[in-house]
Image (cartoon, rainbow, N blue to C red):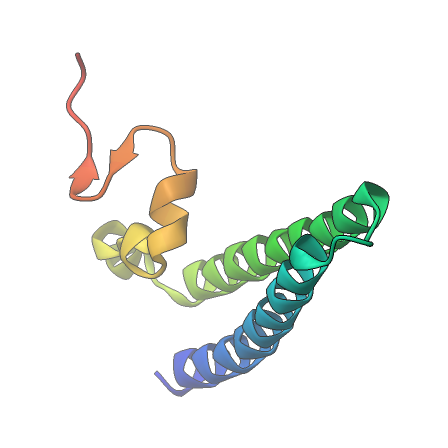
Length: 105
């Protein structure tokens, strides 16, 4: 599926940029935390920037999954396991453990 390959390449390129931005912001946060002259408000502001980038990452992942879903025919859709696409997606799904769905208690 050429469309899927193009979609994956595009997503991973965008995701890589967000990961780099998140890495940079985390380094900046570290520097703020170890600087005794930095005010708490500055640290909180940097934390909000990090949360915003994390939110963008999750939005991109969901948009990617929706686009993949739209490419699949009904048979492929039945066999598709979106949790395997992204480890973080598994964490976002209620009731999902590291090995798949958790059994009811």
